Amino acid sequence: MQSNLVNFIQVLRTHEVRVSPAETLDAVDVAATLGYADRSLLRDGLAMTLAKTPEEEAIFLQCFDNYFSQGLSDFAADQSTEERAEAASDSGDEETGNGDEAQAEGGEPGSNASAELEALESAASESPALQTLMQSDLMQDLMGNNRNELTLNINRAAESVGLQQIQMFTQKGQFTRRILDQLGEEHIRNAVIELEQAESPALPIVQRYRDILREQVRDYVEREYLLHAEGRNRQFMDDILSKTRLNNIEHVYLHKVQELIRKMARRLASRHAHKRRRLKRGQLDMPKTMRRGIPNDGVMFNTYWRQVRKEKPQLLAVCDVSGSVAAYAKFLLLFLYSLQDVLPKVRSFAFSSHLGEVSDYFDDYPVEEAIELVNWKYGGATDYGNSLLDFASLAMDDINSNTTVIILGDARNNNGEARLDVLQSIYQRSRQVIWLNPESRRSWGTGDSEMLRYQTACHFTAECNNLKQLERIVDQLIKSTR
Image (cartoon, rainbow, N blue to C red; front, side):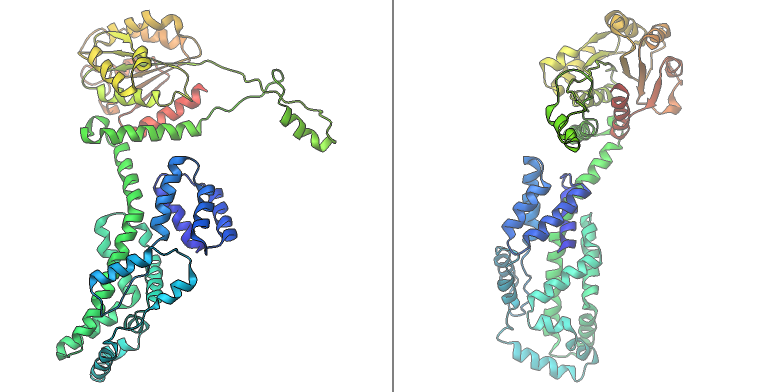
């Protein structure tokens, strides 16, 4: 059960529930304390330990029900497929952990079991393969419909072949075959081949048991695929989108990209949550002062204060929204405005042939709508020289040693005046100038690109054309501005 609990926690992680190693140990202690007899009690205890938000609790409850509510499979040879499915469903409605009822589910052989047994024993005298099969535990359990033992054996076989690692629907047949081999289905196959060659009347009986076993294993693999692969497929899709050039992402996936950006932003926000700095003045932190005085018999030799030293860095985002770069600018702005809690206040500027401040758009409209309005107003042919002059007139007086300027653009100036002197002035006044270029470094300086010249007036330049690169750069940006 402890192994099952660890596997269940892995399922939670694939469904975006954050569980640390320490919380895993806490969950093991909770399960050991509460026991596994009362399923509801175990569920509530684990939920209190592992779920930290209402959203995570909803995911936890769904995963718990799917993982721990699997009924016993039914291998009765005298039942139809529909009857076996109904019996398995009825079993699944029972509470997991009810030991007495589960043990009673072993089942009795069907009414024709005696006749089948006689036919098989008669045929076994002429078929060594069938004789070997009849002596196997697998066939004995199948003929007796020993549901407990067969279900446990399937679980063990699935664990031994690593079914929890299933990711693609094309792997279902592969894992089904591996589990059947682990169970010893090879003996049934050998017996079927031998009985076919001998045209034995016992052949339909053995084939029926073989088909029942295969059906139950396929159903088991299907359930596990739905449980384990859903989260992994989501992670796989997120990984693909995060490494795809943003201008190559089809429109149908844009909502997934926006969701992924918010997920990345939450991860960065959690990583860079503001840490309060204690100083020797301000409001007295009485609880901490008293706790630290306990070793001194309550004498408060050391005092602790709550005043926080506040620094006010600035972040100026200058984005090229011309046709070739608009997609990258959209996602950079979405990323920055999703991190308002950990980044300094962002002032945004957009340009193509001319530049203007667009911060008010993000105050008045939702981020997605504001970005669309910015692209509509400032899109067009690119003129970096004129845009840098506009930026200097709007923001140069506000740039100081506590200011970070981040520029997103391909630096293709349509053979216009580069105005490198303006960027050099910004470089000298600011804390850092960061230039993100969506083009490959091999393209910098080719054609009408002024990137190699602009690079001399930047503290940091980087190729940035997918979300993985953007997350890494924004992570470093947050560290440098704190």
